[in-house]
Image (cartoon, rainbow, N blue to C red; front, side, top):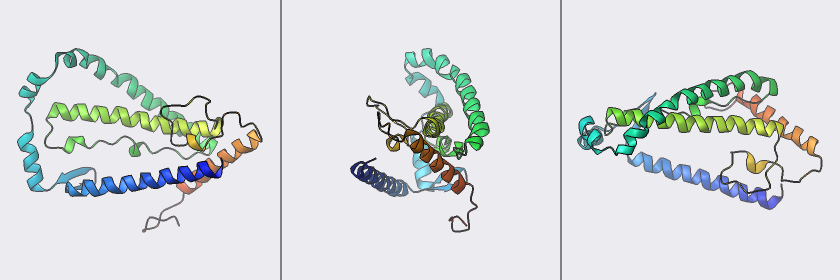
Amino acid sequence: MNNRIRQILDQINALENELHTAIEQQEGRLRYQIEGKRVTFERAINEAHLKVKMGVFRWFLTVRPQNFLTAPIIYGMIVPLALFDLCISFYQLTCFPIYRIARVSRANYIVMDHQHLAYLNIIEKVDCMYCSYAVGLLGYAQEIAARTEQYFCPIKHARKMLDVNSRYEQFLDYGEADNLHRKVEEFRASLAKEAGQAGKPQNESGGAK
């Protein structure tokens, strides 16, 4: 990777960090607190949320007919999704230690917290939790696949992709054949280093001992 590309990637990372900070500041203005697995709002905000909550009966009257027709198909996808979740989790649990790759934390991708929103009725909460599970699962699986790709084939494609995984930009350019196997081993060493850092105990301040 040349210096210009590395510089651009560093700029992208800096902008992403700035974006996360701005989002956190906006969330702070909404005045909610995370207490363990529960999210709570200030009393006045919670009361305002309850006032705009739509009852289940009224909600049913507002649902588009096509949504009713496709609901069995959408919720039927829970079976293949759950099976995929089981398979991808089993894969990284058994194979990643052999490859010396740090396991992906499922909890970092599958986040369930919409059920704490008072302005959603029970059906809306179930819908939101289902979406959160499906989207989070795909993100979790993508990171597992990205680490696997880094281990076996860290090479970019000739054609531009609309969406790439978190490691793709660091991969070798398409057609970059010089010292291929040595460079692949360097990618594997980087994964092993990540695994070693992930396995270090944390002190009270959050740093590695």
